[in-house]
Amino acid sequence: MGIFIALVVFSFLIFFHELGHFLAARFVGVKVEVFSIGFGKRLLTKQIGETQWSFSAIPLGGYVRMKGQDDSDPSKKSYDEDSYNTKTPFQRILISLAGPFANFLLAFLLYLSISFMGVPKLLTVVKDINTTHPAYLAGMRNGDVIKRINGTNTVYWEEIGKNITQKPQAIEVTVARDNKLIDLEMTPIPEQTKNRFGTIKTRYIIGIYPDDKYTETIHYNIPQGINYATEKTLFSALFIFNNLKRLMIGEVPIKDLSGPVGMVGMTAKVAKMGIVALLAFAALISVNLGIINLLPIPALDGGHTLFHLYELITKKPANEEIMWKLTLFGWALLLSLMLLGFYNDINRLLG
Image (cartoon, rainbow, N blue to C red):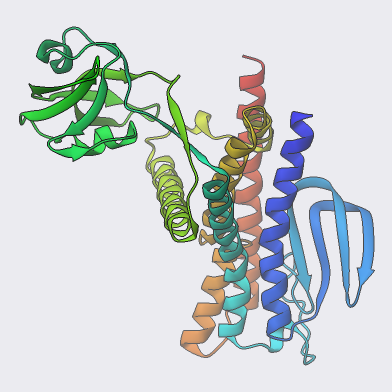
């Protein structure tokens, strides 16, 4: 059941991405011949208007084939009025960017839905304390509820890290214990942590851990939900961009690259955690699809955009032979990365 849900989620994300291209193409007057979820042999096809809507055998992506556009052979063109080739470079840029934009919009809408459904947040109840760290030495004990840090009210655990001064400077922490408020003074100490990518970061801590039995579900109103969805979408984009950068400069080992099998497996696991977790993960994947497609690789939306920008600036189209060779290179690169991710997935499954 989990794998089925994962495939449905991926199909929906791909559909939304391609729908962005489709709507932009129709908006500027380009005929869309095929709208396909998946590649390869078409399993289900229905003609609606001028477009064949299809489900294909290999569920690893999708495509919108517009009149006059053929990624496998950029030299194939049509100059009819409803052809992709007769549109201005700016209009073609709009079509190319509409897919990634649709992914960012979908992520925003998913996060917005989560904000209305309810966001679970940990309360500031302390469960465990490191006996050699500042909090314990200052008198904090298990079961204490942190109420204020340096006079700033704290309700949720995530606010504690934000309010702890990130330097060796004394702070005042007010806790509730046995219906009494107790003021404690402590000085955070530095801790160096290494993430799974090997990056070392320094943060200041007081040595406490939350009690995950105490949570509260927050339901946002519309303005709060919009702010929450915007922040989460931007945070997801920055998170994915930074990980891509680490992969490119070698901070992330190639063996950590995951492929379709790994993504499906992870989605299946998240689906068992509930609808909110599944929607949040789907939003993250949607942002990932948007950013990946913006990479300046021929055959991706970012590569198409570069070709159109060149034409917009120079007032002449890119050389067809060069475009064809770069497109072949782009497909070869994407296929290589996909096979590498698949290889890593199988290795992880086999232990």
